[in-house]
Image 1 (tube, protein in one colour):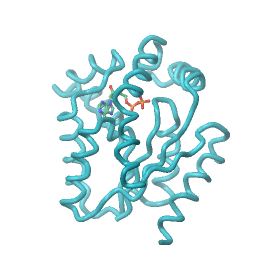
Image 2 (cartoon, helix red, strand yellow; image 1 turned 90 degrees about the vertical axis):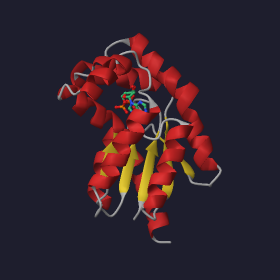
Image 3 (cartoon, rainbow, N blue to C red; image 1 turned 30 degrees about the vertical axis):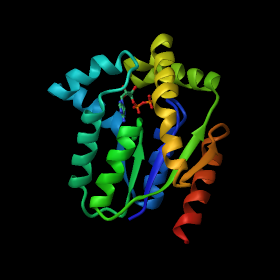
Image 4 (cartoon, helix red, strand yellow; image 1 turned 135 degrees about the horizontal axis):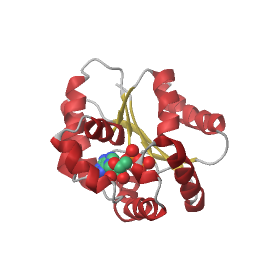
Length: 193
Ligand code: ADP
């Protein structure tokens, strides 16, 4: 299996790039944000609990998202690899993911980290909010809270994988296709090894 984490702050383009990457490399896309929004749309108890947290721009508890990822891994036994998007977001989530992958005799091949300035992130998210229907994209205070959560809790994810030399920084500004090409070239290097 070949497993990738696409890493970066809210609005860094993970969703956009994921769509193209999964098509090219035949990976299963696991986005915790998408799974949570599906729970909200289906009005499940988990969705109801998550919505109020997400609307404040805060992180959903680790045990909730770890449980979701564990089920998703079990539900997809025969895929050639996973692309994790929006997960892991804390050190506890990194450690849990490592254990889950170990049980499946696999690991993370590379963490591709999209680098985008804060000014550009806010601009993109407010712009996305005009059409996304996402309540967490329309309010600048909530967007800033998400970026603060990212800085306080999620930047440690890069530090975690740096100890295993798995992190590659990718310039996340420029055209979508330029960024896609940079991501693909890093993936191809590792696939040919
Ligand atoms: P973005 O990266 O643009 O903020 P996501 O769709 O990845 O958007 O996540 C939206 C919200 O869902 C987050 O602000 C957070 O509340 C919740 N969420 C998603 N993934 C996680 C996670 N791994 N751990 C905790 N909360 C999460």
